[in-house]
Image (cartoon, rainbow, N blue to C red; front, side, top):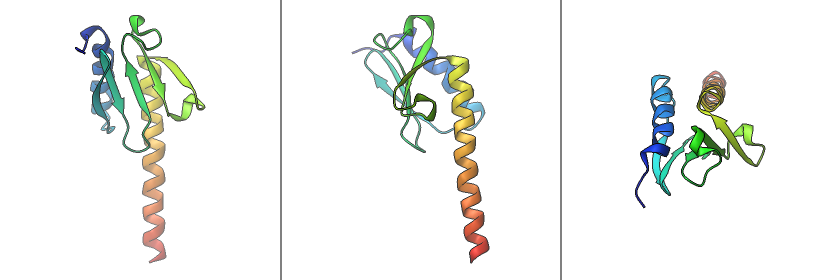
Length: 105
């Protein structure tokens, strides 16, 4: 199936914003849109013709902390804020764990 720019553009906007903050992710085709995956836990954001409110520039998230084991429909701004906050918390946990390990040595 061909990727429809109408759905891919939402993910590209989010990808550009996250790249500016050095948040790691990968992009994969997903139906006629794109999937953005996060390597630190496997959560993802999608936008395609079958995702919730995709015609209104919303994205759908799954496996992310704010989803509560469900699916969330987010504006691009909500998705960006949630992802950056989530990544910074995960990064801080790893940093403090590494520092703790150094202190114990």
